[in-house]
Image (cartoon, rainbow, N blue to C red):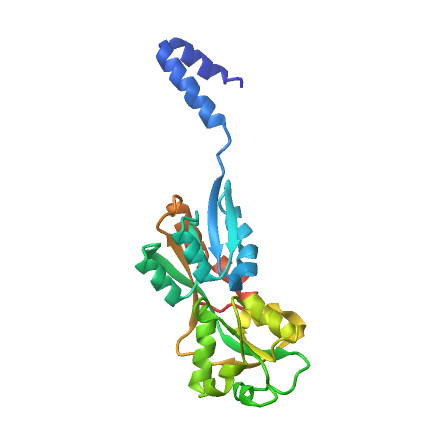
Length: 262
């Protein structure tokens, strides 16, 4: 690398030790910035939305690369407990977040909701038997897909909706369990279930093969949160990403996929 002439003249007038120091500093500044990697764990229900939003955030941070890992929120939390290098968890609901804070895996001061969702009942597009939640008790309805409540908040929401209308005793023996929203939708698409209780955004992403027949009330709004890991070595960058998810730019991208404001 050729140094500017004025800098060369100044360096030659200084003692040798100073010349070596300044030359090293100049060479260091001339090197390209080292890329920062932010490891982001994303709940399955937000995988497509965050994959779309991530490049928009990276564009605001030259040299930053986001690496996304997709799994159900509870599974991501367990991986974090086993030492997985996750800086941020995205899409976690209140119950899972509280567990993560109790286990000192998530920073309680670095949490925030950035989007909301709704619980819906979906059926095959050409099906007519199920038009509302109460129809799940009909004898001709053989199988109902629900999330596994021990690992999926969506499963708890589904069971709460059935209990609220006193349908659980009639539906319990028909339940087919799945570990994530993708599997729930596949059960209905493939004819392995007559209906499923899923997030509205998942139903929209499923396309014309499925039809939403009812939006179901929930005791409280279904909010998706973003949380910074206590083990993150990129805490400042992780917090910046969490803040960006609450920005107008991110909200516009999320709303295009059916997510509501927090």
